[in-house]
Image (cartoon, rainbow, N blue to C red; front, side, top):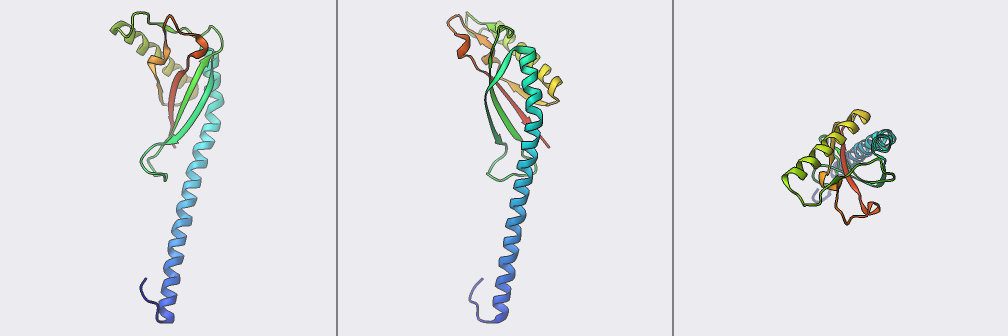
Length: 159
């Protein structure tokens, strides 16, 4: 607002400031509600996810990171929460794909097939539709120590 000369100008300035403040509060409440919704979904799905990968594959979550999708820092209606997990084997239940000759087409097919089977099993157990398992994290080279392996799993929570 420009120059304030009258009581009417002051009232207009106050009304504009109150409207901007109300919009800011409304946006902050939206951000808070979206964040709480996604964190509650994560809290609900993680025990089922952890049980699925432990029972089916002998894996435990080693690291978990999350981020919202989309551009910008603020939540938008189409944004989802992306969960990135590294999991490691704790027993010999998980069978890695042995790739001693590098990434040949046959090895890539084996890795993709194993990744798809895991994705389908985890999706069935958890009800999560959007899951990605990095197929190259499922390979075992001859010189690899099992304690150094992390399987990369990502999934997206939608509301």
